[in-house]
Image 1: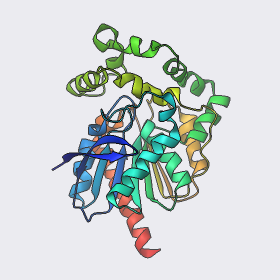
Image 2 (image 1 turned 90 degrees about the vertical axis):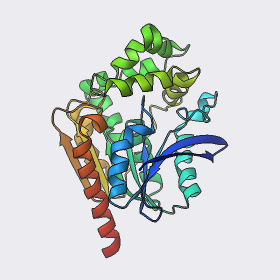
Image 3 (image 1 turned 180 degrees about the vertical axis):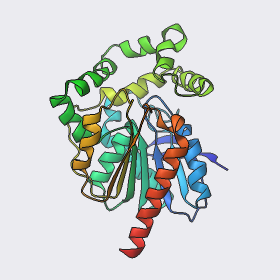
Image 4 (image 1 turned 60 degrees about the horizontal axis):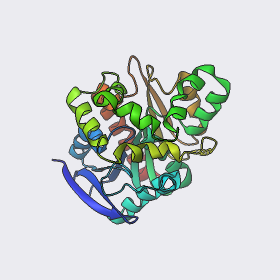
Length: 285
């Protein structure tokens, strides 16, 4: 049974969800925009039943006690430092890492920079950042798909006002009808709290659109829905060139960006297989 907890990291108070035996191999799960740790509820229960210790973090800006006002506090360096601080707090020298959307972005970054810490990487939806940047430069389709970032980065709380007007109609629309309405309502209520949506959007405000990540050298699983609005086929398929280790690319036909809700059974099986293969490779390596 999953449990809710909180802990101090980098001077802030973060909330998290965890399940599984304390001695189990650690798995850290990172959500994206505009979701929270509970997007991983199905997968946490599934992995814990398989003997893993699974922890999903409400990340900076999403945890009520971790909403600094300074935009620079949401740089990728600060965001990844929270992940490593959590691992230190739990005493994990190494861990499996799973991410979706922005959580996937951080996953690529951490796997590239901390290969000795990451036992395996599983990413949903978000292609390797270098593959996305290359596609934006060469593929008109990907350039069009990525234009929403410019809107999110606009100053003066323009995006916040757009998302929250009419009882959050535009924010609800982001989920494309793929996420249960009750969960959408919960997410909108959370992001309607004072400062919450600004904090979430500060991830975009602090983003350097020219920063590359570099190659990933850990066992990697990448799962992409071919109806994803944000990531096109070129970036998804070219992600393979950015991984210099065991790599598996799985396309889910007919699925959009919201894979945890659309295909939680399928992704659970794929991720468990990936983790078990990584564990077997560790034992034989």
